[in-house]
Length: 236
Image (cartoon, rainbow, N blue to C red; front, side, top):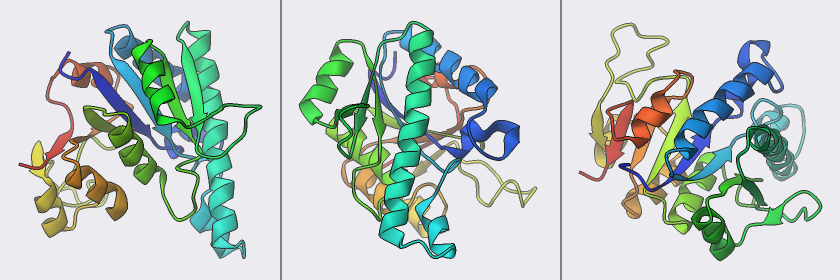
């Protein structure tokens, strides 16, 4: 395998499927099967999942909810998704641990770096919920930070688009996909990959990012095997 330890970042919106809200059982099942294929290859796998299908802190501000309060509500939304994913993975005979950025001992473990690494070494899938436990940080930032802390080889950002483009491919038919691009080029071209905090963390710690289409069957497995899928972002 090209990567021994990976951090997979999934968006909460991806779990909505065609419903436009909540958790779609078919989409959850699909992601579970894709993750199982990778796990069977012997890869150490950590996952961060967003909560946008349930609640986003920035949305709360529009209806008068305090931003900090809204962000904590968003953290709880990520935990709901993480618990759903954990249940689905375990029903498919995978061992998991759910670790939270905020203390909810009745539901999951608090995040402790050494414990997280030990879980991975023992072959368990580690799911990080509730962000980093502080407001004003996105789940992209959580993914970057946790990947650095557990010494992951790469951040795999699973989206509904098959990479980074010169423009929004859903709006511009002439947009072209990058196969490889540097962190500096992403800055200079003002391309939308992650929020700036998350992106800078990866750049400063020389942690590669691959943006790929998670909805295409086999993509995740092909990536781990070293095949060219999506867009690779590196320092060079």
